[in-house]
Image (tube, rainbow, N blue to C red; front, side, top):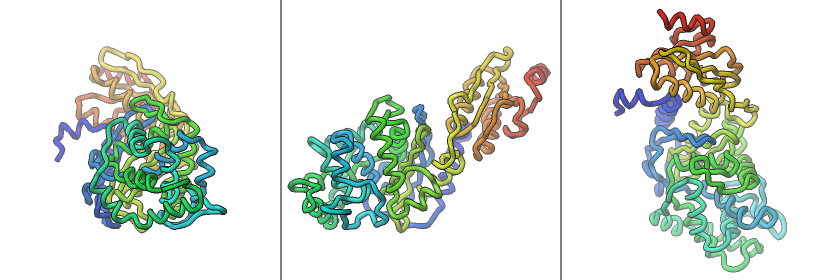
Length: 415
């Protein structure tokens, strides 16, 4: 149980994630897989912005098998190694409308429908050059920004149940997609599915795609902009298998799921999301993860069909107003990154002053959940002994003192 001090230290965004996870944790639908799921009752959600800020709530540090989420990133490595023209000859980029393990090839002589079904993922592994699995693992580590391990238990279980995947590998060989013995590509595929990650890892990996191929925490360019764009495009149309259409309507973000209970999603130019929740629906997607992604998309206007508003100039300026207070002027639209910038600016302004004045008269747009997050800022400052005065913004910041202009705010401070 968290202490009052720990609760007070949670920022409004973290508190929102806390409530999101608490709500999703109570969902009882779905069944987990037996191997590689971490805690079968676990639930966690993490966000990483393209600026490298990471937020998490719940079981975000529990390791579980990445499983099919790996397909997106191995496809990226294949594109980096071989280029688009070569990979396109081996793997198509069309939604299959079929189950993830369907035995099928499109056209003559045939190629997988896309790299995110099993047969396409095995083909993508074959397209990776050199010593395949060590290179794949190193690529994942660059994406996550830390060392990752493979679970021998999951790998053995995958191998024991790989009869269908072996059939897919030999089908690729018969069609000429794989030239020679497919065993090495299949083994690399089984091993990559057995790599252990956390929800935080997935959020950072997703943010790398959202950040046009640059890992936002380390600053490492992991892939080109063109590769990141292509991978996100394929995730948008194919990442959630035969539930892709319903997912895009409800959530509206490129995403990829795995039977280990994880989901990675990305909002281009904004953030990556990683969730963990082992119970799966009939499509093999996390029930809790789907709900959390849908809620985050709604709360922060992340759906691709909603044109994002610029967030870079949300904080117009921060100035010394008096020995007791700083003034934070906000402007423009407050989408997720805008809210984050505003909250950080206000909390920083309060670090060595007893009061903060927030001028909201130039704010033109608020995403739906800003009206829930902003009042939490008032509560957070009250918990730390600070006073908050708002210019404009009516009652958007809860029961904070509201003034017509800065002069009136100064008069209130002087009382």
